[in-house]
Image (cartoon, rainbow, N blue to C red; front, top):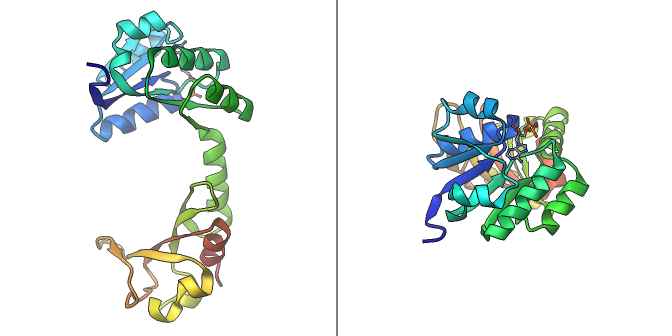
Length: 220
Ligand code: ADP
């Protein structure tokens, strides 16, 4: 049956990005079929990943023979060669893969990937660069931006708010952000409520527009 392999993911290209991606998927208990055209790369990762095979992923026939058409999700992690990345996405489109994820290394590359049929395009260098910039200039511990001007951040309790209850802080009215959770070191995550007191050592999960989340994190 087609797309029987719903839990599995194919990762094509075992460079630095693809290797980390494949490893993370495996740790999340997903079956991973990893493909690279370089025999040395295949050899290198075959001890660490369950199924690593050598093939040129731009060849539709090769992909078919490997059973790639049975997978619902395929990630093209090739970065350096735009040509190989685009031709691979094209081959996957021909196979009718329902969820093609592709890595772009530039805006133009991203556009081409979309136009040949990629359903999701990720831009790891650009996304990580931007995220790390936010972490460096603010006191945020982590920051995820979703587009549409929405962000979730992990922040320390801003100094002026230490020791106060959320009811009194009224983050939504005063700062336009929602404090979703508060976590004390060594204790489980708890959803924040009006009675949650912002302890100095707490870590908060805060959501809202990018600017408002940043302002909240930077309160002095
Ligand atoms: P990174 O920046 O993550 O290290 P690279 O673009 O340098 O990524 O690595 C891409 C990987 O994709 C390499 O291991 C390369 O052998 C592999 N690759 C490139 N073209 C193909 C292809 N046509 N089929 C399969 N694997 C490929």
